[in-house]
Amino acid sequence: MQELPLSGITVVSLEQAVAAPYATRQLADLGARVIKVERPGDGDFARRYDTTVHGSSSYFVWINRSKESLTLDLKDPRGREILYQLLDGADVFVQNLAPGAADRLGLGAGALAERWPQLIPCTISGYGTSGPWADRKAYDLLVQCQTGLVSLTGTAEETARVGISVADIAAGMYAYTGVLTALYTRATTGRVHPVEVSLFEALAEWMGQPAYYTRYGGGQPPRLGTQHATIAPYGAFTAADGGQVLFSIQNEREWAALCADFLGRPELAGDPRFATGSDRVAHREELNAIVAERCARSDAEEILKDLEGFGIACAGVNDVAAFLDHPVLAGRDRWREVAVPSGAMVPALLPPADLAGVPARMDPVPAVGEHTEAILAQLGRDAEEIEALRADAVI
Image (cartoon, rainbow, N blue to C red; front, side):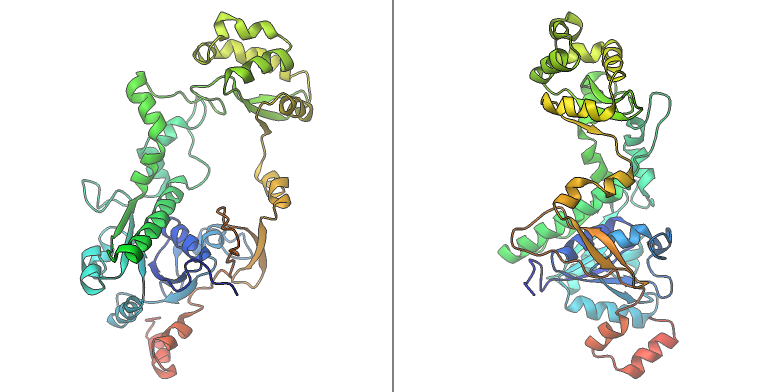
């Protein structure tokens, strides 16, 4: 088997929920050995979010493939000693425990640096490990609310959460890239830089455009459903057959083509109400009415074919089932199969970053504690000691 880019790198992770497991799964995708430390018994509570994937949680299956699961009671000194022994040979330590929990276990960044100077610690928190909210727990929707994202999402009448765990995903992505950067720096300079990411600051970065718009525009962008606060026409329109077609006009060439070729009204391109992008936004309701009337005369597939022919970016509005059957995913061979704890095989998407000539790692999703005995044996524990640890619920 071809060696993957992070082969030889060992990651130990005290992880739960979404953000940290998403970061470490991406490290595992690249070949890192990821040892996931879980509570004896139920393990990571994300295993129980739902049971839809052959008895496993859809969240857990998504972000925990290619890992080894080790169960440890870290309140027991014997459990902590096993963890410390793992860290003796680890390159990266990732944790997203509750505020203060890592420090109480002697696993804060300072303590780790003193005992394991070559270990890269990565801390994922809700609002940072310092500052006025350092002691607050944070979940995805709370952070969506605190960053103002929810106030931008939905319709004029009602706000809505983003339909995926966007704060967790943002934090996981920045933790992943932060760890990669720290590994590169250690390899090239010998210096070790601890990595810290908070859900709040990760999503705050993604709020950059509306933040500037609000600060300098006198008010925040309005909630407009599928419409866009600063571009028009932009959004979903209903076709004669009830289908939804979304398109966006990004420049004057596209605007002229829409007027002449699709609307059949070339004179609109020079209409003072619609002459510039700002004018079109200011007269959005009048413009939307014109576009909606035209869309109501054709079926969705016909509209999509016409718009594509005119060089205007467009798409149907898929539900998740349609996304699963998307021709791009099939045509680019993006699906693979991975095993879940029940033994069933389920489809999984390849990592989105393709490295030419490097195969994707798509190993099974582990059961709780599946690798505990093997890992302890590698650490020199014999069968009698392992059985004693199990009898005392340390593992």
